[in-house]
Length: 389
Image 1 (cartoon, rainbow, N blue to C red):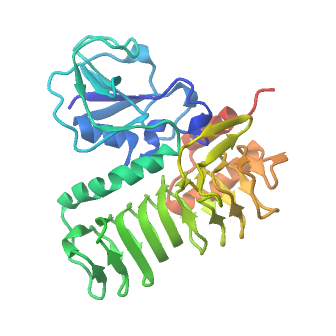
Image 2 (cartoon, rainbow, N blue to C red):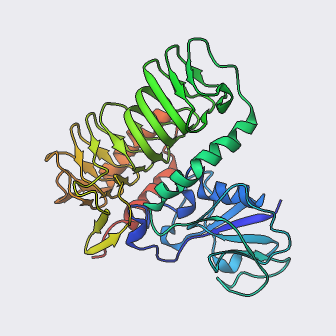
């Protein structure tokens, strides 16, 4: 199988907050798949490394390695991590470049050819997909691709539906793969398919509306979920609409969550509520430090970085951006932008030892060991998010 490398922008900037300097863009979820998984499926290639200098530093055991451009030689593909290809992709044949709207989004290297950077040389083939301008466009990818992603996912087959499950629409649009679904659960597939992966538990009192992809080991503990891609190992409850969970996150209580991107190891306290629509019904702007970004979206909830925690009753404004490791408590109304590792009202910063102590308590609860490699990766994450001086 051909090797594949994913290419982040050198400096993603505020548009990719709260994941800039925290997470490779190729490890963010565009509809059902992480970006490196989308490209791997599109090209039938095996991911060999990530070019993501903004997250330089140690990686957890088993993570895809970070590489530098001078280490890449063909035969291989190099693909733009900010472009979400539509699946399935048309056959690429002998094309040297893949193009969208006149811009190259992937490059093929022949045997022995070295990677020298983005270029416009060689035969190009036009492909369909979504150029993503920032984190908010992960929601555009969800809206555009989750329907077709879940339909394609049905090809893997399904276990028999458990008795007592209420199906609205065609039962063949449901795939249950080693999942436990209690009697009384409602599965509505009139607008899209529903996939429940191995180890998923769906409790009685839950209504799932497709398209919906629930990843391995996730528990859905009640409430109404629609147009959601989540997992692995999440805990979900309440009203959740048009949202992406990267994995290992808790939203276990009541409270509306809409049009939001939730990072890894997030815990949303009971009664945490997002606003996803301005009173004026106008386009949502993001305020990140001194920068104001136009998203062009009418519906946009919260963009929540890895390891964020919110207290009970936290109210998140439209277009809120919560930085890595922020721990919100005190005033129930959060500001639109919360810096990384903010503690309480944001005037105090969580220390590195305190952050590592929390990780040591939290991550083993999902069977993820905080070994030396993980501690080194978490320390590097903290240091990348620490202002100079």
